[in-house]
Image 1 (tube, rainbow, N blue to C red):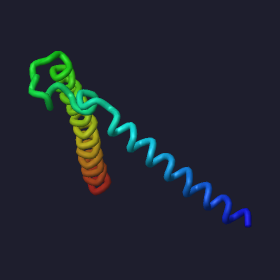
Image 2 (cartoon, rainbow, N blue to C red):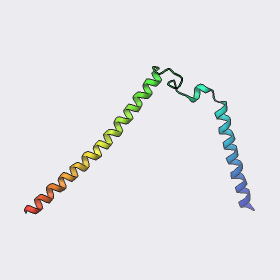
Image 3 (cartoon, one colour):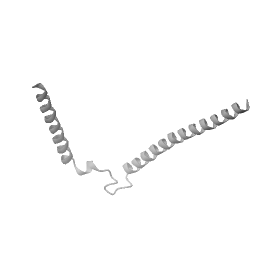
Image 4 (tube, helix red, strand yellow):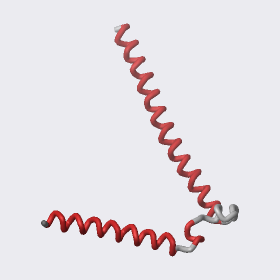
Length: 89
């Protein structure tokens, strides 16, 4: 019996959440749903800041990937050097 009640509550809560989300999406003004670039003002300060943020994130990602690549190249060279030293010793 209680299982049926909790199941009904979950369904009711889910329907409530969907209806609130739908109402918020339709009640929001159109300007709140798009950035200035979408409205054609591509040289506004917000659009410039967005582009700079994207560039900054790309620099961070490229730096991390470059660091990983450099580290694995270092490990490969070190392993090769140790293997050569063990062969000669």
